[in-house]
Amino acid sequence: MKVATVRELRNSFSMLEVWLAEGEEIRIEKRGQPIGVLTGWKPETPASAAKPDFAARRKAIWGTRVFTDAEVASMRADELEGEEG
Image (cartoon, rainbow, N blue to C red; front, side):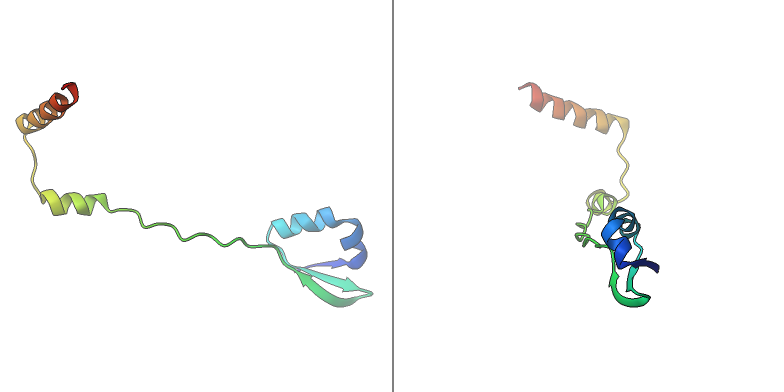
């Protein structure tokens, strides 16, 4: 924990601000006696949304099936046919 005096707090706050940004706690003293503690602000992190498991979905739909080249070509042709129309 860093230590700063009231005078440093008043005259050199930019230095203390850097310490706070780095995650330090600062004990404030007046005439050698501690009078308070400054801590940096820790923003709350929003809960991240669960990412979909595409591999599990693919396995649930198709299982272990492997398409032949002819099947893939046929599916692509069907997709392109719908776009041209």
